[in-house]
Image (cartoon, rainbow, N blue to C red; front, side, top):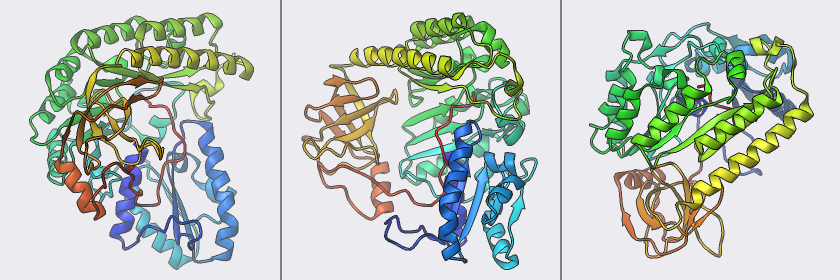
Length: 478
């Protein structure tokens, strides 16, 4: 969600006449620096104020330089940012990213900081200009906000209640993206499978997935992040029966303990979660399922943690984003008793990641010898001069590094068929000759966008256009 917001901020700035600053460290620093922030974990605060501190002497040498802070942390901290870092020029929230160019100009003219935080969404952000990072893949927001009240999560108070776009608007945006050369879209929502709650259609999300299957030229559809409580069988059926909906699912578990799930105010229990996993695997045997897990939630006992390990063993995740619980002021969990000691949290975190990696490695090893079609990725190539490997994503979203032997002029977005020869916990390798290639409109779009063709056997990478970027990685809120 933050990455997509950053693409919109880049589009807004370019629309207003700004150009990306040179990435060379020896070049003059940027005239405008924008921080798009997250507030899910405490590390975001530390990173923001650390980065602002580094920029203070730079701005002191260049009085005309402007610094803007937006996103969830700006929505939360508001005037705190300009108090802690009075050299910041603009603070804007999650509901008014479209105001950034005007606020920058206003701060420049008034010669004082501008703080504008709207309490609710007025215009759905998809109407804003967007400078996408990728020529072949795009994020498409179908909703913003969340109606859940998870005790560890501050997002609902910052992003607001769920607001849904109409299906026709979403499909029109996807069709326009495909016309530009996009072949893969990821549908985004804070709670993506609750889509339709605002206009009263409980099957709106599965209908949307099926409608995506009717769009000519759209090869891959993904979505993130669903919530187990709203994950219904019609969605599983739509995934299984719609050829361009990929066999990958990110399903946040958060905890395998029913007691902890109750304390988290997660409206499902471990048996329901495991039931969803079983039904997905029955309908889509090759599905790769990933998750989010929080360790050390207040009151978590060793018995609770062992229950989480058991659900992980039974779920056979292909990967997991694991997090040590981070107390966030303003959330109910911050005031819960029995906060778990840091050394206990650290120990459990290590045991969990060991198990997750062990299972992911076993699952990847089972794929050795299998033939898979990859979409060639940009910016993910291994910079190993000896092997000249490129990278791509399989239908299940696993990362595969491959040697482009026998494949000429591959471009990001093109398709290659390879045979898996080696497995690691977090990636696969295909070192044999490429079995087949397919040049795509997405590759054509990459050439048009970059103004260059990709030489055979050379690692691919495309500079990211635009200065905004999310600060830390953060767990999905689903």
